[in-house]
Amino acid sequence: MIDKQHLRRLMLGRLRQLPLEEKRAYDRRIATYLYEWPPWQRARTLALTVARGTEVATAPIIERAWQEGKTVAVPKCDPLTETMTFRRIASFAQLEKAYAGLLEPIEEQTAAIDRDELDLILVPGVCFTKTGYRIGYGGGYYDRYLPGVAAVTAALAYSFQILDRIPVEAHDVPVKAIITEQGVMSCGQ
Image (cartoon, rainbow, N blue to C red; front, side, top):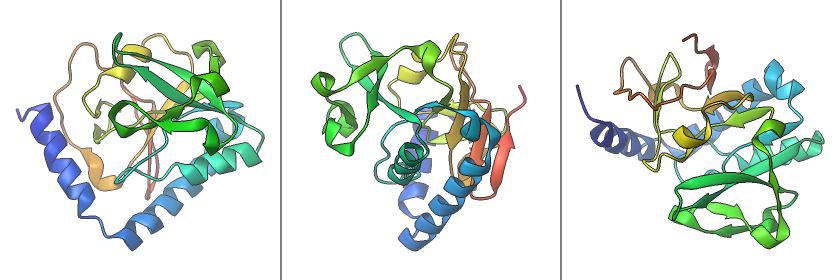
């Protein structure tokens, strides 16, 4: 079977080829499906990364969450311990460029949120299976964070990021749903 690094490189190449106007249209459709999804509507506290580059845009999703009165939590990675915590942000000004070029919360301006407080976690990934397994960006942060989390987990992705098979390891934790420009896919494991 093809290895994770090879699949990650291939999919990142494909993502870079997605025309900007098409990406924007897909992003709007994905967000619309997300807002109509019952776990989004029920969620009071939402955890997600601030997207960059080829990822599904999350800035509009964060703004919508604030408009709806939701608490927004963004991950802060600790490369030394290879762990992450989610911290509440109330403004994009509370972010700084940090680990791997990600926008992360400024610790002095934000408060940590306990994993039990999270209702919905939008998990990033490069490619996925219909059963919710994913290849991430290679850091393993979510694979270490997600075991035992009670929150609903979902991923935002373009339909071409869903593959028939990917290598799955014992520590991999599948998401419960994937939201694409074609709708919400429940991932029955």
